Length: 220
Length: 230
Image (cartoon, rainbow over all chains, first blue to last red; front, side):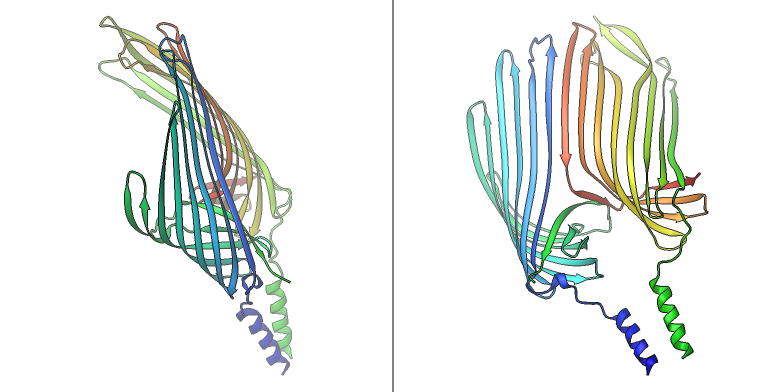
């Protein structure tokens, strides 16, 4: 009898994967990431015969934010907001005349999604993210004081898998595995309109993966 | 009844961490060294050559059985012998440029956290910070061939990153390491380029400041190394 009990405990310990508390109905999800880069460049010429000093500056920033809620065990409905900003400014002088160019491209993204999780171990899980991406793009550039503004929009459907790693029960790091994805969409830009369909399945693994910080907040 | 003791013993064994060789206090060294030299003999021109070295040494110490930290030092030097020809009113003028034209120095600190799977194999990961200075001098001929331009580049880079790797123990003294993933999430760089033309005392100075923050990593990164314990 004791033997049976012991075997029972052992098999329970080894075979059953405990349902992960973080992936239960009602858990709220918040995630965010940011990346930025910039460059400042200054050029000076001596003697300044034809060219005078010129300055060039760029700044790019990509913040994104996501909120979600588990509607079922392992299934989450969420929405992602993101912007992608690119600013540039250049100032140069030629034959005694100044030229100033300013450009700003901003894209706003809105992506409602459904995500399915599969728990691999207490610390690891994989997920499949199906999202509808809507983007509005705003381009503004000015040379000297002549301003030009244009708009564009894009829509697409994306299917991207990802992986999560829990550092603490509430906090995890996530990355999308973009070497495997499926997307379709439509881009409407001032100078071009295009329809695209992409499916990426590659065996070449080396790739850049962007990391997101995420919190799984359970109600008590 | 004996079976119960047997199973209990098995359970305890499987639950307890595997006893490993003690690593704390052990020092290790790893690195790369490269030396190059090339010589070109041309029928039409005088011979030219290029030479240089690049040394990279990592010195680390295990503070505990699963934690190590240490320093990375790197230095490089390059030199060459070049023949450059400029034309003044159609007459060629040869100019020889000999000597050291590049120099680099880097220092970094790393921290590594280990997970030993068994007696032979394990993984490690941790952050690192690096500072590097590079100096170089290049020569070029203006597109019309009339003047020689000297470019002097000074560059300083500060970066912070994360790296992860795998090790395999060949013996107590020698380990083989392999990198798995790399992240260079933050870096700043300042570069100063000064171009000097020999004719007309013409100079151009370009200062560039770059900065970047990107929480991303590269995977997989394949690179093998050897580590020696002192």
